[in-house]
Amino acid sequence: MTDHEVEFFKENGWVLLPRLVGPGRVDGLRDRALGYLRTRSRERATLVDQAFGQSRDIAESDEAFHDLAFDAAMGRCATRLLHGVRGVRVQVTNLLIKEPGDDGHGATEFHQDFPWMPMDRSAMLTVWLALADVPAGMGSLRFYNGSHRHGVLGRSFTRDGDDQLTQHPWLKELELSPPLDLRAGDATVHHALTVHGAGANRGDTPRLSFTVTYFDADALYTGTPYKQTDGLGLQVNAPFDHPRFPVVSHA
Image (cartoon, rainbow, N blue to C red; front, top):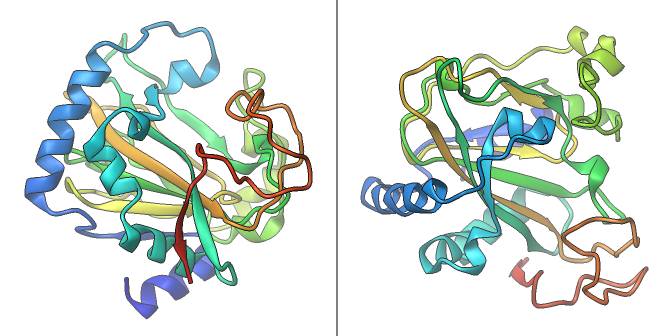
């Protein structure tokens, strides 16, 4: 990762990292992803389900995705981008699919990732890796530049027509990132406070991606109800010292 990419992320809240994963490795990951996604639940009960399908916590059961998410180089990149943190933990891994066509998934409304989280600080980012070519028309992510500097703006995916742009029309005063054509192995990285979204998949094949979210290793647990952390016995106002949230990198 170059100094320019780090500065771009700091300024805009997102960055494109071309060729993050090499062709041979990403081909293998794509084949594995297709196998998992074929068996996923097809239920579309929530607004999230209508935007994309997913297979959560994939790194817990798949060695190849685990090796990528927990690669020390990935952890060092995340630590460098989250300026001022000593190290990072893995929060969640995910396989995502956005199906094309009239019966496919719709647009992913503009939102922030952080408002749902039970961490006491927002130093968090997500690496979004294209497992196959994702031309802009297939629904690659777009970002409101600098939106991460405006703090927590509230939850989305809670009510129809209540995304971040509806709640905060002034966001349209910010520059929207250009449509991105991603090749397999390219990745975008965005801060958990960056407002982002994606259009529907207008292509002929599914949009396939793998995501891993990293957060500040020194973050404290707030006790906010959250499905992933409920019942783990985490102590409020203490670090996330639990096998589910291992430290990947120390500065």
